Image (cartoon, rainbow, N blue to C red; front, side):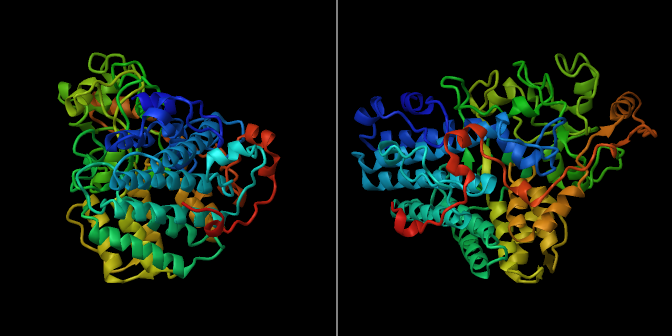
Length: 568
């Protein structure tokens, strides 16, 4: 906790920010194995805190999975002064800075070599994750390999953007070093904990290779083969398996019993220090969902387009709505849905009863449907205070919980493998690719017959359904835009991203009479214009103030031979 206070509370300004070096951590910390592990713990949460809203706005609103009325991410009008964009950028640069500094401390630590290598491997993986988000969000970015050097030589306003391919090579190099350290530390099998190990880093490397495969403008068979190779090793040798029940992945207890969650933000329930906690429930849940007065996300909702992808929309009679894909209910709630794992002290959570029964939903919506799409988010919600304490033994509170946020799961690796194994073709009947694809689909739809061939479109859709609301969908569009910008644009502009009008009357009538009546006034909004999506839309702008202080960010990126320029 002392380390988190001294290192985590530094203001997250820009890519120059780093932990303070004049506090107790430099002179009295990193003296033994325990302190080294403690010194890495906060990299799993605090530096990432200000990314949480960008995680949803970029990953889900921009991609068309989530409706957030009036958001510039909904209509593609984000600029360099956007608060969420600024916080996201600073958080990612802060994560890189903290990792750089912690790695430096660890190299000089008085601890066993195994623990030092373990902790360095974890920090390097987090550093690679930060750069993976940076390059996919902002495109060409500077490489800050060593904060101390940049500060020491006074070059902090004189750094240049580096070409996108070189940034990816830097990420690959960083992950290779992480894997080397983790392997030498003996962190090569799932041990029942949530910490990063060799296969966590390798899984991320597989995803990096899948993404960078198209960065030249056409897909690289060599990169795809690497993605398949690394993904297959994780699948076969990591000791991890898919969780049997999909919804269990997003609960407070037992979410990682089989090791499916390879890399997650691991939050703490508390506000001291601020930044250690998960606050996503506040932004995503309906008012009154918990008793802490901190939920204001009811007016947003799952997009009509994502509902159509699941085949279960808010315009459908709940009694006739398909319920075969278990991921749907674990991703969003709509009329007729009840949840046994929320409000367990009240016998479960009933969506419509919460909205329309003033006694049951005391402090809630007060009889009015809030969501403009008739469907509210389920992922990232922990429930009420009782649910949290029963699952964790710790109390939740105003804007804090310890529900983990998953960034990379084994199911993702299965789909990475299936797509990479397909190569540059548009379909495959490869047995191993089918096995991976059918495992993910079969878990989602119990009893479904395996398919005997798959297309690229099959995987594209399956990724959307499997990873919806997990901050990933926009980045699928970004990597597609590298080599198929027109296809990515056409997909986005064909989406149904707007509100659904008149659902409040339909829902209330259904609750009161159990009769589903959809009148002529209840319909999807076709009047709001389709957003203007261009090739430039797949790269978000730098924060304006960063550009003001460093004009090089507006210049062409430079080429850097990262293998010879940088070393670990």
